[in-house]
Image (cartoon, rainbow over all chains, first blue to last red; front, side):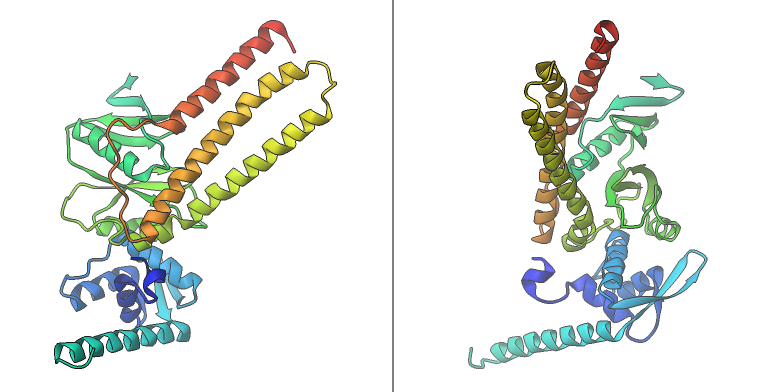
Length: 107
Length: 221
């Protein structure tokens, strides 16, 4: 199911945005961050990564902060931080619903 | 056609049919023919040892030149994907020799986003071709009393028709692929013995232009 149909960020989008929370990042660092954070559960192909970086730049969720040789570094904008926080809130609500149902709460 | 370890072959797939093209190139590599260059109608292969290679078409991003961005190439290389050649103007070809490296696109949604501007370009060019054809036909209607009108029509109409067929086919192939990817479905495996419609149309156009050239050389305008 695509992102629009589901109304949130896809898992790769979510993790790419998460990688910018505490520091500016370049492409390789983002891949390494996701690999470590998810213990290899989420694998990000380089085509997916660069497409998402392009999409986030277009939507002004991230911005380019430095170019050193061939290495480009990006940081998250306020708009990006808001989109990330909204997704975290949505996922928390989903999890709370699931836990309530698991515990035998009212449907 | 052979030349010092290289072989030139007519394209068996349309470059816009992403899954079919990838599949054909993988079959060629399994037979020991490794793609070097993708032309308008022909491909050049290096003849070597048969290998299992994964080929992936990467849609060019807006602003990309004839070759992919240097940083992108380096990072793709580190991820196990080597750059092979440009399939101008809309795709770059990458290959992975190691079967364990992650796919170039690990989710359908991002691939769908990546080909969006190629679909937009195919839509625009189809509309432009339709408008030009209608303008050309309107021009004909307005000069129906002109001398040699039948000859002019017979010369021009097949060219327009072939161009329109080519643009329509390209648009439909890309539109279906984009729709499937946006629904989260990966590109489906192509059926065996798929007909390379674009190659056939391009060849027909070429043959028609050659025939016209010969006709005008022999009989004058």
